[in-house]
Image (cartoon, rainbow, N blue to C red):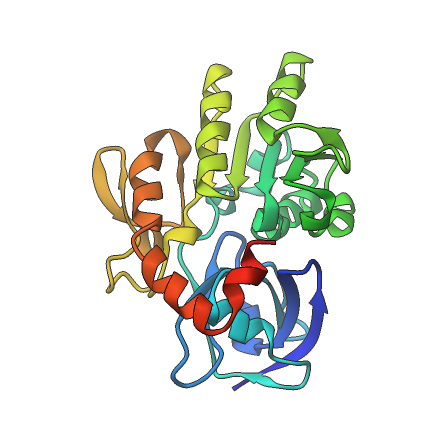
Length: 286
């Protein structure tokens, strides 16, 4: 059992939690993920680690209500317990293989869409604390869906915010901001994009125009998280990979995004049935 130490509602559908998990916190690295269960018979939910503190034995997650199982986790209160938190799982971000000397002169750009701000946060924080130059773009449909803006501002050189409707920051898409920065002379050695699959696809197309090396995270494909269920199969460089055990991060230019988006829709009908049972269909349409 894993105690929920802190719970905050960030938006109508997104929650932040700090969880007592000393062993996970001691081993966690940027880019890795967890499998979380609300109860003994609950569904296994893969969640990227938002932050970790090995000295306190605490990990942080940000979870968005997208269906019945995530709703049950989000409805737990401070002081209550998650049945299980398994991890860290998956491969750490590729920059973890670099020495401090190799990192110090590199420049990174991170692009996050919606709740994607949570999984990029530990990566940005790690690099910034190493003295690496890091810029961040975060985007959402509107200002009410932006998360972790204040935390991100403290661990990067420049934070750029955009919303589809212009309610905060610049009006437009993250791809527009990325292209404008590069066109204005910003030079980056590498980029990381995390967010909705369609957003990562178009960020990849934008980055390709400028030969910007780019990594994307396919954590949203995962179900079981161990490679046994096969739900997260995806074509990468023409070979079948599993997002959970081979990733979750991959070279963006090798990913078949169209195939990945088709795979994401496989369970939509089942999810709709469960959402209606809990009355979530109305909440999720807001």
